Image 1: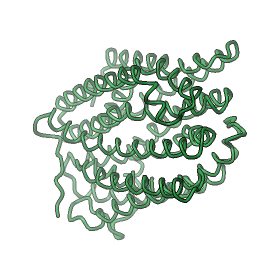
Image 2 (image 1 turned 60 degrees about the horizontal axis):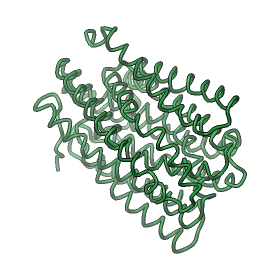
Image 3 (image 1 turned 135 degrees about the vertical axis):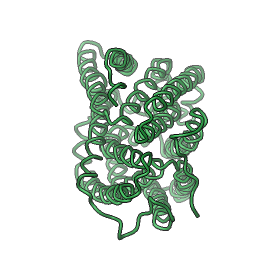
Length: 445
């Protein structure tokens, strides 16, 4: 059956953006939900040290996965352009190239993650009480990372042609599988942290299988069969030209977060567990930011492919404003209910206090986080990915790391470590505003 695709080059802008972003919102919600279930199960069944073990690995996982996710965004931009231009031949070649790259990247990432995880966790000053569980969790996670890469590749293809609902269905199914397996492995069988990663691996394999099953059987221009899988060198170069700067942007942010996490690790397992609980709640706040960022990139890319610059700018403006408003409303809610939300993951007063401490520092500044991510998405859709890369590199990596190193040298206070985030969000927002006001980037698209 031919799926209903959203052609963003025509129709009401607000309606098109919301129709496209809402399934992304639900998909990200379910993904974050089963991440939270992981943490709840671990914290309540296996204890604070186990929760700290998994929490301390988050920046490392994003460091590796983020680079390839950035490249996947380049894949989506290229396919969106061809879809907006109604170029069926290049859409087919792009889909085949994207799948080939996903397979290769997944294999490389699996090998790299399983081999180098122990060494990287030691460099991150992971607490000795959590190092064994953290290593087992990350190595198991990376053993099945190819399924996540392939699902993200397929999801990017669907979104590029305006189908944001189908990835949602697959994600809901995998979330249900993950939750059931979490409770069975840990709650019923009494297995350890590694079993949580196994549950995630199986769930991701399910979503990847469903996504590619449909790609293989769909009667549409973006169908992917064994015959269409290929490497089109010019298209791959175009995808990498857009995607690599985004991948570097994600990676440098993750590198900075690894440095920050290393400093948090030095305050002990309680601080790590509290911060980990905070991060799980923050993930829900990030959902509207991520959803509208992805919608903005697709909207801008499709309309620029159709040579409709004015419409691209109108959609980008609506997406940025909406994401900023939603993020700040959620941030204020998080600030007010932080103790109750953090206590979901642990009943330890010390862990709750640590999580609330970070929430009350960061949550009132989520509007800055949303603004920076959404503007970066506008530029990504316009194939101008180097600008956000350099801004994020300067603000969220170099300056953040320098701040952390200086402040922890003179003051052994974890609150000052937490302030690294809102301060660098503010700085990147100022840089993006300056770029938009002073440059003529929108006149040269």
